[in-house]
Structures are given as structure tokens and as C-alpha cells.
Length: 189
Image (cartoon, rainbow, N blue to C red; front, side):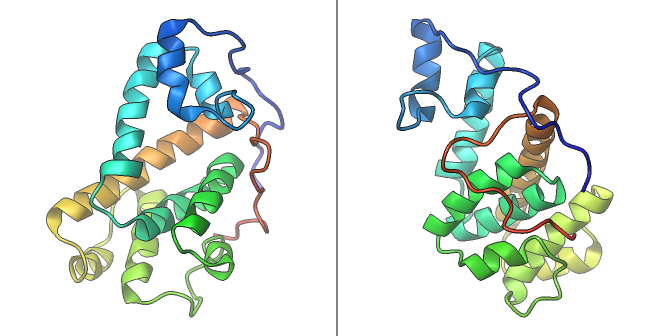
């Protein structure tokens, strides 16, 4: 597997002011601390604010159904070998209806019989973007069978956003939050 830091390169904040507390309010875990990604991003409050706007839109206000959104995010996390991204979205994916078999299959080449044509198009889209930064004509045609233009825009930008996030998580050495699973097996894509 590609090298990844095993500990924080940038440590999460330990103290907040009123403004920062408001930004972190929706990111708090059971222990009252922000999830590690947000604790680190809080060192750049202006960026955190904008990050939360786009990330919050994708997760809570987008037009893509949550199960399909999580297929895209998990596949990106697998491609990027981002333990944090894959672990966090494994938890979310389970809540959105993804089975353990489907989650593990996202770590492997698409040859699995787990996926129907529409899900396969999402996986191929992520594979195309992660390998060549462009969705192939073949994948695009298959996407158009299930998604309208606005939805395809959102799907491509969701993959791009989470690819950026995964690169940050990996580079900053963001450690898994307590209770977040690691990869169930090493990615082979």
C-alpha cells in the first residue's frame, strides 16, 4: 500500500472561541470534541466555514440519493487509500442502506456481481475520474441512462470534492476518530 502518515502532522485544536465553537457545533462527537478532520480544519476558520458549506450541501441538500452518494464517496476513499474517508463513510453508508458486501466490493475492481448497471456507472465514473480526471464517453452514456444533467454535475463534483478531502486527510495524517472502522481489507483498485 502507498505510504500514509500514521499520526497527525497537524494536530486538532484544543481550545475554541465563540465564533469557532459555532462553526464546529454540528461536528461534535459524543465526547463533545469535534471530529478530527474538523478539529484540524479549525486551524483555518475561514476555510472551514466554506468547507462546511459545500460539504454540508453535498451531504444534506443535494439531489443525489444518499445511498448512491455514499457509493461515490466510498469509491473515492478507496482509490485515494484514505482510511479516514472510507471509515467515516462506511458508517454513513451503512445508515444509507449499503450492505457490508457492497462496502467491501468498493475496495475491489468492479468485476463483482454486487452492482446493477446504474451503480456500476457510478463506480466507473469514479474510476475514470481517479485514473484520468475525465469521465469516459462509455461511462457518460451509461450515467445518462439514470441521471439528468444537474445530477451528473453533482455526481462529478461530489467525487472531486471527496478526492480533494481524501488528499488532505492523507497528507495531514488525520487519525481515525474513536469507533470509526479501518478498511476491512486493503483496497485493490
